[in-house]
Image (cartoon, rainbow, N blue to C red; front, side):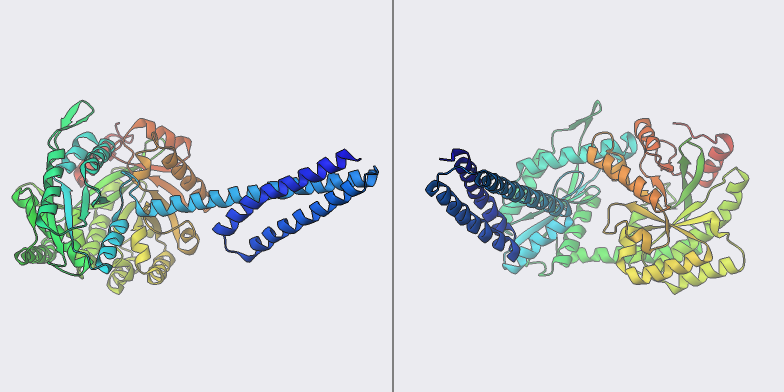
Length: 527
């Protein structure tokens, strides 16, 4: 009897049988009809192989043809088994990547907490289920001081530590999320006073002990605002605004927490006051421009970013992010940006005399890119030769571009036709992609500091920055790295051939006089 042919054929049958389970798993994961046909074919092959085995047993006469045929059957079985298992592994890997992308889309890159989108989905789910719940808005009161004193790297470490400690003491019925910066939120599955007050107590208790950071004991103080669904409102957006209003009251009055009530809507009047003061500040020239250096790999100043500041009589400054947001909610943002551009043109004449050779970067908002008023003002400046287009770069955030992509694209192309160049600010934090670099007249990207500051401790961030530099260069775009705060990161960026660097390692945002002194007295900024 031809035992070799029988063994080879039997082996082929066994391998085909072992292919049935992964084939079935593939059919469960992918409903494409082709996989079901393949599974049916495997069963058909098993029947065919079995028939061949029966023939070999019934015809024991040895034959070279039988052996060759058995070898083919055995090899075919192994081939099917290998292909099926490799296909299953590929599908599993794709699922894992997709799951990771879904996770990243719903979680904060720094802390790993659920992000704003996740929080909205959670509240929308409660809303659909007609379930009462409470939203707690949380802000770290002294975070800016920590950032200013220790730098953004240690500020980020503090955010991570706070997140872990608070998250560890919350009950499963509460969800902690990071909204951005030093802002957090907690949504509870109950709107009962006893339940949300318990959350307030445990969070404050958790933060009583200081955090140890680079030899310092950092005490963290928070402000909390609470809004109830549907008692205060049945609209999610309004609920978040109410919780923020209540939180700001806690912050201003140094309260443990504040529960939203209708009287707090008076805060809207305060914003209206700031709004009216913005126009007055423009007319009376109360704003100032500060400049932060942008350096090349040799640490020579190449250009600078113009940053608006609003000094007060007592020596303090109104937070620029606050009044810019208020301006963006009205028609005032065009006037603010026009003031910034006009002042930068005047300052540039002085900075050239002090040795500045590169451009000034001017930040534009989403509204500016859809404004005929702003476009007409810039057009007149160019027409009257009050501005040289090569001396200024317009910075636009990803989110601003995506607000109205078609309108933004049209306006950017008009500015580009005049000779202006555009830089994508905070690249990597929004919803755009490198495909936009082909569709829009972009000549530069600024990689967001959230990726830069963690390059040395996070391989993923290092890979992201490396890929951004490589792809941007292949698309004929220069690259600026934001948030460079130490020499290690600067050296890594230089090794990646990043074109320009910006951050506190080289320069704080400086007044015109101080920045002029920096240019005049030291073309290589001190570390």
